[in-house]
Picture (cartoon, protein in one colour):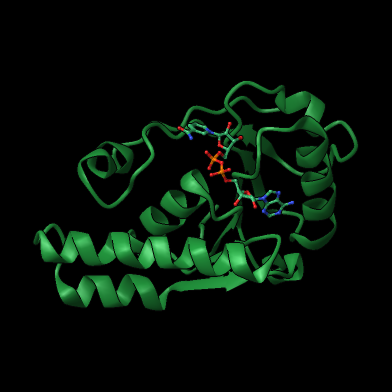
Length: 163
Ligand SMILES: NC(=O)c1ccc[n+]([C@@H]2O[C@H](COP(=O)([O-])OP(=O)(O)OC[C@H]3O[C@@H](n4cnc5c(N)ncnc54)[C@H](O)[C@@H]3O)[C@@H](O)[C@H]2O)c1
């Protein structure tokens, strides 16, 4: 399956970094937060990280601008309606993640691949109410996409468990 657009749930430490890496890799990214204040904070962290990367000549100014242009923040999960891959990076709370996946199952296209960046919760428990979508655990290592640690994250390993 070709991934044309990526959705990210949560624009905190991990969600922001995941969004940044995906945008730098050339994917249009829509990132969801719970309120405007947190969305603004997350988006400015991503912007600052990309600016640092450009200043340190890890990426060019044009690459920074292109990555920023691919990023869209949202408070509406409906904006995931055309995402082929959604990576959940909300808080580490099973009930919250179950709600997120129940919502994603309603709005995402049937082919969409839904992944959780959980540290240690069960993917099966999260998916218990929506067996229709393909899913996985996506383990992304090392937060901090724009700096030293970001180099590691860009090399992040994904390892999935289908359910
Ligand atoms: N921090 C790490 O090093 C690390 C490493 C690997 C995995 N993880 C996992 O990644 C996930 C995110 O961790 P983090 O450190 O980025 O947390 P964080 O607190 O920095 O960010 C979580 C964000 O999710 C948002 N959020 C909560 N519920 C939401 C919802 N329903 N819809 C949209 N956004 C929502 C919060 O407002 C917050 O901004 C957790 O499951 C965590 O266990 C974290």
